[in-house]
Image 1 (cartoon, chains in turn green, red):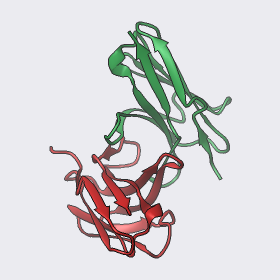
Image 2 (cartoon, each protein chain N blue to C red):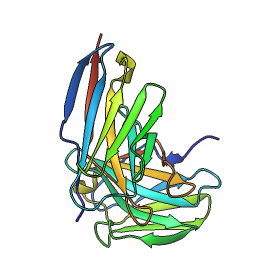
Image 3 (cartoon, each protein chain N blue to C red):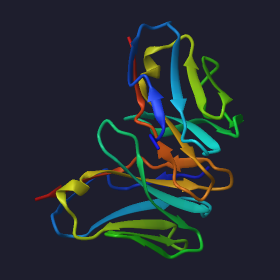
Image 4 (cartoon, helix red, strand yellow):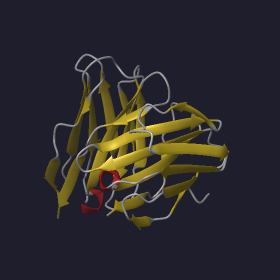
Amino acid sequence: SQKIEQNSEALNIQEGKTATLTCNYTNYSPAYLQWYRQDPGRGPVFLLLIRENEKEKRKERLKVTFDTTLKQSLFHITASQPADSATYLCAEQTGANNLFFGTGTRLTVIP
Amino acid sequence: DAGVIQSPRHEVTEMGQEVTLRCKPISGHDYLFWYRQTMMRGLELLIYFNNNVPIDDSGMPEDRFSAKMPNASFSTLKIQPSEPRDSAVYFCASTQDRGKGYTFGSGTRLTVV
């Protein structure tokens, strides 16, 4: 069965630097990969979606890449700010509409 | 739009009692999902509906769990009887179509004592 893994449980980064989070999948290439942000006590909030045939997607300071050879998606936050501190979840979607989530990476941006 | 609305926000109940969680999806969203989140297992998909019809309930842990969607604007997740291991945060989410992001509610934190 498909597994989606976010290797880092936690990532600390200095304000102003670029944060890079990794998401790996183990078997077949998902049709879509999605990235969400979750703050404590709240539901996940959708950030970006990238399709299997897309290499890169951008939205303001956010960038997502999808490498089907490496079976990996990278999520970048440029010019990081303390307000970016949260847990970031990667999710894969294949076939039907089921969306399966990784366990998340908790990002802390240090002022 | 008010987003996906879940109630109650918190629920504390005794083992063996029936618990009903409620969800109102975003108007026009044809898909509705119930997820459960725990520290150990992360976000797990329990069941999803398309146009009010249950499509995949393979994630429902056991027969104690049931979900209904009587109309396009309302869904319930029921646990009967509840057990301490059901303690978790339960999220409802909706989306217009595949290939689009999901909108999650604020969740219901369930504690079974």
